[in-house]
Image (cartoon, rainbow, N blue to C red):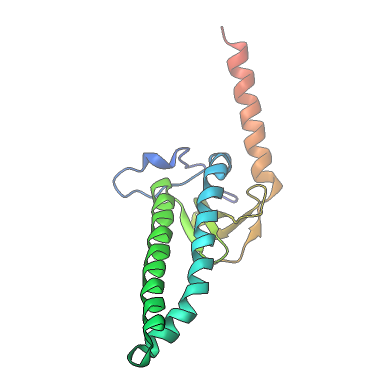
Length: 169
């Protein structure tokens, strides 16, 4: 079968016994407001660590010759780095709970698991993008545009579903 698979779960929280979550394009899109907040946390903590780490590394290398103010700064940096790492891990844990994957931390790119051509894949999104518009295979981070046919099929299915329920008494 070409395109995305028919076997999907609409709710990431319904993981059963280690079975991987597979999301539809519509379900993944509905999660974006929450995911946007989490991705922002991920990017902020990555940025924070990128700022703290060089100075911390320099002070760690010279720890035996530091003056007292430099030692105090080193201790503060250790605490700040530990806090940033903890907050980053908490954000990643939130994504795990949702059944999502952090594909690239510095940019906050998030993977929404799906299946394309019977292969594990992701709908991928990163901060600044208005909607889900890309996908990639799980073992390949090259992002490809979501084909219009995928979303057209979903819209047609939804329209047919509404028509059936409206005509039943």
